[in-house]
Length: 145
Image (cartoon, rainbow, N blue to C red; front, side, top):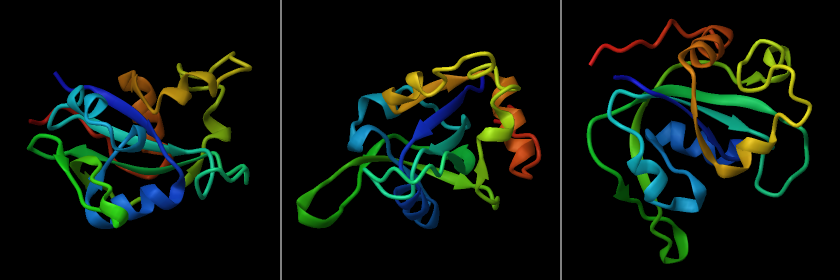
């Protein structure tokens, strides 16, 4: 059964992963990525453009489907080897979360809606995932394994 995930990272990191066809979460930890299966839908939310910046970006910055394979180690500068998963990213614009706050099950009626996002990876309902996909101009991503 297909599951849907919301990952959180700054837009600069998401843009790199999107360009190179991968995702990573929680500063490269493997355990969260092991919860995700090939074929699952994933969308990234970026609270800011760069890490530690408070620019109020608050946007969905990528959406796609996890490719076959297991988490693997990537190579970055200074010997850092974060865990990653390959993703088939859709062509989509980045989109503010603000117009959807009242319609997402994750956020509707919650003044502290950003609180659960601090975990870096949370499961979304199909409703929320498809609502975000539609807002980003992406056709429904359904269970077609």
